[in-house]
Length: 308
Image 1 (cartoon, one colour):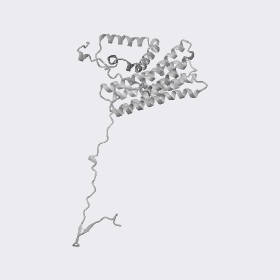
Image 2 (cartoon, rainbow, N blue to C red):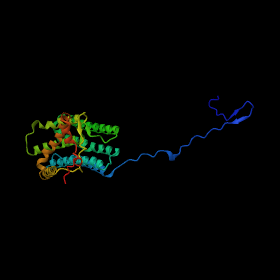
Image 3 (cartoon, rainbow, N blue to C red):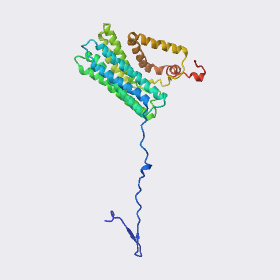
Image 4 (cartoon, rainbow, N blue to C red):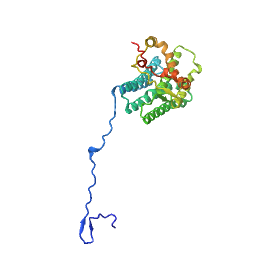
């Protein structure tokens, strides 16, 4: 009976009541509450990421618009491939711009992963299903879209794992990628598709070669969620000085790509992406000195050998 009652007075042995003063409940001062954290959204790196996402969307629209019954089918598909490869360039630039300006942020990392899933996951999977898998598995159409969906799911898992590891380490992902990066996987798929189209335009007999791309997509799906480590090449500083010979070679190479792009791109791009894929396997077996020369920028200022 007395458990829920509030005692207002105590009676002393003399019979004189004494009031019991209850303290007021503490009040919370709104000014003492911590302010909600503010998102750091940097303009230029996220603008590059938006360009990546835009290219992925345009590539998807081109793939949808492509009609195999029209004469410009190959031209439209090549435009889609161009936008996927252009998205790779935007993806390369956004991280470098963020690191050069010291503007890396969790928002940028999440935004970049969402853009990558569209440009390098959905677009390549839909592209390969549209022009290859649907024709390869004519009698078993479900096999074609199942292979494409495996590539997309593994790409999403790889992006989610990257974000979790980056959040746990409190950094932007470190010097290594765990698993084959999804932009490189999309670049390899797009470049191989471009090479197959180049063969088809010249009436080369393909035979069983058309089954190569589905196998490669399954292999890339496995590599994206694998434990193989690949360098991020974050040590390569675009602002660093370069020896004169390296500058000449780079200028000649870029000039050849621009002048002879229609003739050499179908060969050069698959070689570049395939070399990066294979490098992950041979990387643990080469010496640290050779690995450092490949992956890291030489500090010319520290050695005093600065080219003017």
